[in-house]
Length: 296
Image 1 (cartoon, rainbow, N blue to C red):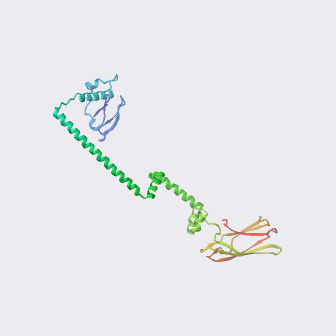
Image 2: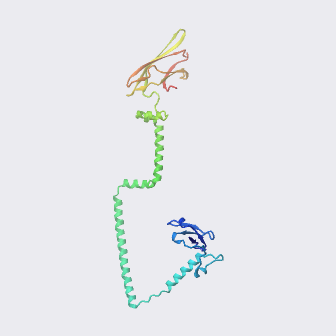
């Protein structure tokens, strides 16, 4: 099968199987013209031949014997216009008067039709104004806010959701102590993520703490004892206790961390504790107790 370039008429041998039903774009190797080849454009022939130009096309061949398509198309368009200008339709006076009256009737009909359109538009506009007056102000402002924020666009909504999620995560982190205080069951969730969300010793209180200084086997000692009270309605683990010895200016002299003998205290209960510190500083004036997280 053969196909010919529509511009330079160069012919090519081509297999019919390579041209699908919907056609295929080809490029001429001579003039570089890109054209669409359809199955019906293929020509059956045993020998490759050069297609011949028509007499009209020969007038618009360039120096390379290629068809100037723009000039040819412009010439064809001018001929069509000339044919239209040469057509003269002769009509009688009666036909002309009848056509004139018909035209006037059509114009009047069109004029009435336009008036009806404007009247209908005016009625619809008034109805829209009335409906807008009766519309809920809250709904109106909500629509304006949605338009201002660009919530009509789905991609913008996606970014807003991402921003809200990030904001919620930040709030959940920085307000973690308050969150766990109000909802203790969320404590393990933070613990799984490796985030401290519980204040060490929260809900526990030292009560009736006393100290006794004495000497045993020529070794000065100080005994500190009292109670640890649970102020909550749930069972609590007792963390490690830090004992700080302070001088008269409340400056730290020495400290000791120990784990209580009883590690758990039930709700609204209290347990005793006692610790003996050897060789306390003679400058000790105050003793300060705090709960601390025991190092593992």
